[in-house]
Length: 394
Image (tube, rainbow, N blue to C red; front, side, top):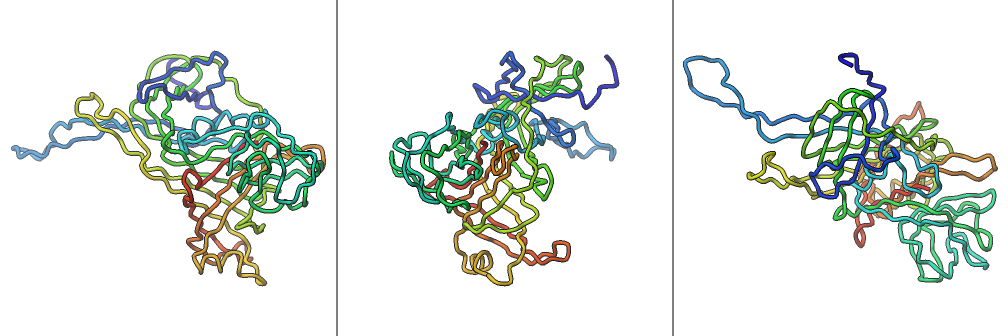
């Protein structure tokens, strides 16, 4: 086609690698490995380390440089949304979250509770094998849907929610929906390949050995569409003249708008206007002088999860945030957003985030359009392990 490649015709596919660093091509046959990315900010680039040669010669001109280890870096911004099928893995986020966090599990069918009296925090099940602590589950009480994280499980007896349902005890035989949950388990973090098509029938970038070194939830503010941007780094990138391998087939799921997107700190529902979360991974390379590119693999060696949120200051109660900060007490953090349905009090496509234990590390006073708020900074930490953060898609 020559020059004139149209940016908005570009596509991106992500494929988990069977062997780290070995490019895995698109092969599903149905276009499902392609993801919807935001038009602004999506990029994958290769640079090479320059080795300067500082020699004494009869001129001040530069000597020819040598190039060394390749660096592949980029960013992949997507909407923060679920699958169009309740509880299935989100198409645009699945590979990225498996790389960023490592852990993934699913409740693959609706779970019907026992025909008995429940409480606002305890729901009884004769079979609890589908559930895991940390899962954020949707309790489908008629006209009163709510999402809560599971704090504990009594095997084949009950699940206990982290804090009470706003609408009180659900009905006998209430249904709990299916869900996909991602959580910290970086020992099982995957590497992946990317097919980045620059234009529909133009240039294809084939990227291997990618890992997510960061994930940042952005634009979660009143009336907006939340997004998540992933920073990535990889082992290699080739650029070829080739068309997209398949025709993309995207999910028709709609992203939630941050309305009725409630937030709790330590079980206390607080009014706020903006929320952000950052997952920062340290990705360390395994280097080998015997390898042509100098790097053969990578590992995640450190992870930090932090939250920024701005609840309005309450002049009648300092115990919910300030006292927790001042006394260095643990707090939990929970938030979710969803798409409302045509039935009052019911919804679908919920995205929920649960941090069971954290510290408020800063609580500065903020001005929110003339109203005093707190800009809370919250840092997650482990308890028993693999339990610092959970992201559930319903």
